[in-house]
Image (tube, rainbow, N blue to C red; front, side, top):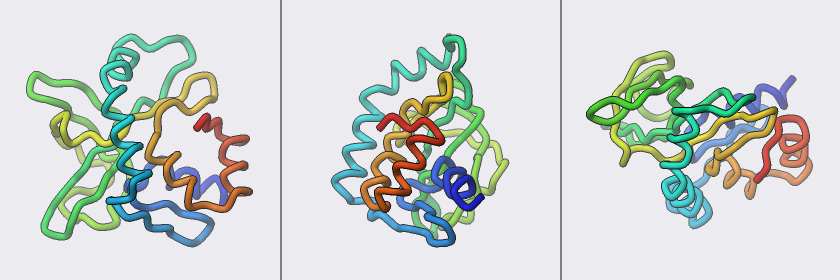
Length: 156
């Protein structure tokens, strides 16, 4: 049960946070591994958006991770569902904020492409994208990472 709750948190949490059981793990936003994950997500964003526009059989749970900033700091939060608009994107915050107070879970937001830090979806039980989640695996115990990969289809 704790593993399932931790996975849900991983999928929906801020870029710099991961939960292992009852413990939250922080990763500095300046982490080279996290920066590389965000760069990889940006480089493949157009391909993801094309897949979202015309999903293959077995694909669902399309989501974007978006940087939200207010006077309390910055947090990267999953937005699901989302859609492209004439001026950028809109979608629904899909997790509870840990740092920012300007948005809340379930709130509809608008954002720009530059605010996107990751993307993900599930195809036939396999996680696609979610590069920042995969980056967090570097700070987690090997046995926990193995469980996530085996039970939830992470391919990173």
